[in-house]
Length: 426
Image (tube, rainbow, N blue to C red; front, side, top):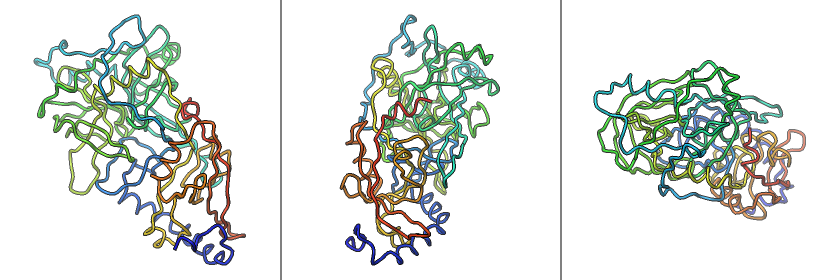
């Protein structure tokens, strides 16, 4: 079957042209197919945010498009020793005791933590159908450190990844613009900062550094409160318990070690805090199971994993990570046949403005079937190929492109693989 779709497709030009034209009309049905069977992000998956079967896992970000980053390096989830040093930027406070749990009501706990939790609002600019579209999204974050000039906020990577502008708010009215510090795709964690000058300009004066508890000490059944910017409507709280520890969920082809809770968490809660009865942050709300008949299964990245990540980034700084700049989806043999695609590969949903893919001429609707002569049959193939590429390298993509005048043709384009940290510097 494969030879039918070789580079020389002159004999099949009319047939394939009709197939792609038909596929364009099936655009909306294909989205529905993906939403049912895929690991979803309340939108479309990006390069490295792969398609997989099984339970539908819903990342908790109110977003319309996925992003396109693959990181070549995976960080360890080992717990770093927390640093408490008021003269240091790494002023992360880890409590094994303190803030009394006795007699605390949910109201009191929320008040004690609220000034450490921020609402995050983002803007994404993508090239869609030959025009630049601005798309809003929302998430949450936790203030974990400060120095003389800035405060530092930890959130989920998928909240800020690929965004052109990010702002934070503590009162859900006044907003201050944030800057990118560092992130880890595999851990789904990121750090942003806001200057105190920007906070002052925005009229934001009441903020606190969060206390972090020891997630290894959690007991199943103890109370847990999820706090975050649910649906982008401002900070809110929901009450539940710790349902399980040391669970593993696979999201966007990443295996995350998580805490399970039945506290209600929703889009916009991503990056927000899961708090215990002492007012300590014990996790970052990240995903939930989105499946008919399933209720109350939300997952949070443990606080000890967060501590290890923040300490690493604040100590070692940014790491170069290869970035192409697309959102795409696997076209396997079944989808190829059902939707009349000319080949298996990766279908390009969107191309992000200013990325290497954008500058190299990749377009929405292209079908990638080779990467530097490496056959691409899935998002996993493309993810692996990109992860093995150094930033700054130029790669050759073999693609199919449909045109109403010329039909379908196979072509090659050159794409520069750039550093995600540079492109994420909103």
